[in-house]
Length: 162
Image (spheres, rainbow, N blue to C red):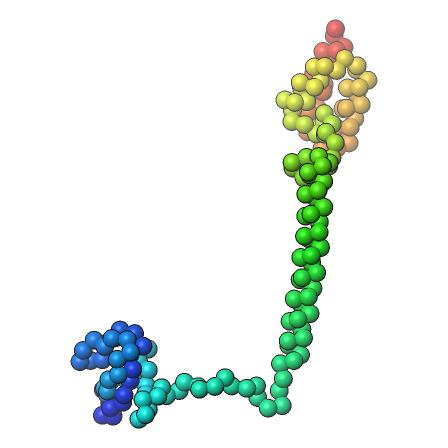
């Protein structure tokens, strides 16, 4: 504790060494200033609180930084407008039925783009060995999935034996 007594106002509930102080209560004590305490001068005004907003230092200006920020904001606004226009365009296409619900306007994938069970089901309806040979070549040129090649070879073998 200090020998010097100071006057404070409680910002929030706190203990001054003697009793619990309520927010707004003015008291005098010699304990060190706590975060919950606001020191007052002899007229009862807070010490250290500014009565006005400080102005920028003389000779210095924030105009350059403000201009840069305004430019960045303008660029971001442009991007947002472009995105909003694209969203509106896609929503119109979706409403018109030009797009599927997944948002792509691609045609139905070929048999080699399907899963192995779907490919096998598709191959059951193919009776042309030449078509199967073409699918085998396409699969080898593409992903070369082992399961797909096995299904193609199995169907080709079935067709050759019948």
